[in-house]
Length: 294
Image (cartoon, rainbow, N blue to C red):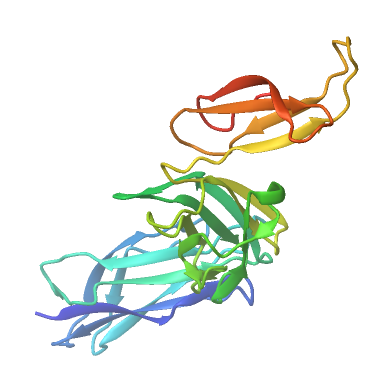
């Protein structure tokens, strides 16, 4: 009984340059004295007959031939798309045996310029002993994607409103070093996971800003380490008028963290003499994520 396998002789198809076709080779070993019909299953992210000309699910290897080819002809359309796949798998039959190489993939590249877009899958990271739950972002790639690519990014701390670059936080996934997203050829996304460096190193809970210069966009996430609370004091208005209900000085306490409730005690001092002594006290209670108190 003949043994049938499948291989790719041209794995890169594209909507441009013709369009450019991809090619599968369906091969057999054994007796070549008569034709052999091979049944195929067509799958992948490309829609058969929409993103490419209809790929047949049955081919015939002619008499005396050890193989036949199957073309994937992309349809050039006006829509921006990600790279798409056409997967062909040999189906079973009583007339042949399926070999080890029984499935193969061709990718179809889009004809639009490359564009990147970020999707936030999980904006909160919790890192403690026995817990590693990172913040997760997917950098999506649209348009031409046939080449491997890198995309630099920066991580900012929440100091000065998230504008200070830092290499303190740990980033893993489809990354190179601690600051570059990596895309394989035809890859449609690079996943970035970031969290604190280790449970034993206190980075401080707080906001982390993911900034990608190439698309000039920032994405906010929260990194929380249990047992470390970060509370920020800001001056909103510096002037107050005695006896006025509308003109008041304002301070704000806030914490861009996720974690258990926390109580903050604050003392108000005044006068020109040093050392200043408290004139009153207030207690602030934070029940959850970023609760400002004016």
